[in-house]
Length: 391
Ligand code: GLA
Image (tube, rainbow, N blue to C red):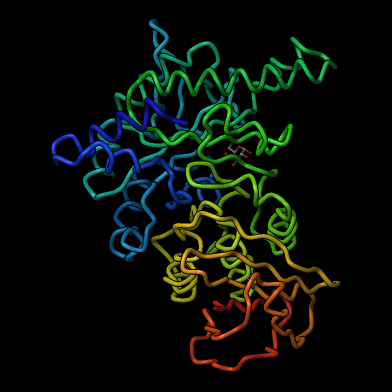
């Protein structure tokens, strides 16, 4: 998958370094779930060039870049119309996209952008319909490293041309994503391809056929425990569809946006890490509380998400409001989340070793409370979680 783009990446990355082809072939776009930041959850339609520059500065100064947050992604509302030759134009909020990309790159970061296969994006801005190749070339020329491609306006085209024929509509949707995949590859620039069509037609089954590096599995998240919980726990059963280069995407992080408690954001981050989900922060990095920083930059949690085995975690049990999820890790240990989705504090114990895929339990490390060395049961508050690494 992604062969031409990967090759271009390899030659650009390793061409001058004298690495042999065998070594180079092991590199892969999105080999681990993409990490970075996206403008939508906090800035939505207000995002500007300055916000992106400030974010790039903050990603570096807070230590987020060094923790793995590399992509700075501009979501919807950067687009204007097209010039006489059909080239996409940026609006007044983004006076010079090429210069902005250069600035982000100068910080050791990568930059992402957003479009739609439809004539219009979700926010009603210009989409890529009938300009796919031209837009892909423009992105490559600007130095873009990541494209989130959001179905939105293309639904009108599907309605118009397929009516109630759902098979036809879905075939059109697949073709629209395949078209942009081809256009991106033709540029020769490695560009992460992020599918956003809310999981329609079980995207996890066909996403690999259009070389999606990640695909949204649900509708939009919002900054509420109820929605985060609904999306996160609905991912049960999808683990077999994810792996290096192609990830299920339950939408971006809300950590730090202010409407959930610290325990709830901790649950959010824990669940996303167990899901090997892309970790795209969605908060205003210029005003992060120490608690938000501690959640977003916990090295052990990030390591679980980014584990080289590339296995998504899954649900082991659900008993009323109590859920246990596990994620196997490369070194043979298992990350275990004991989630209490209820309101009251309850004692939760580790399931039997066999349920964790282990012969026996030799050691337990508590990720969020390293000082807590008990072997359980643990008292887990309502809307909270205990995250353990068990070997
Ligand atoms: C859709 C997507 C969101 C965001 C908005 C932008 O709703 O699912 O993630 O990109 O469009 O308009």
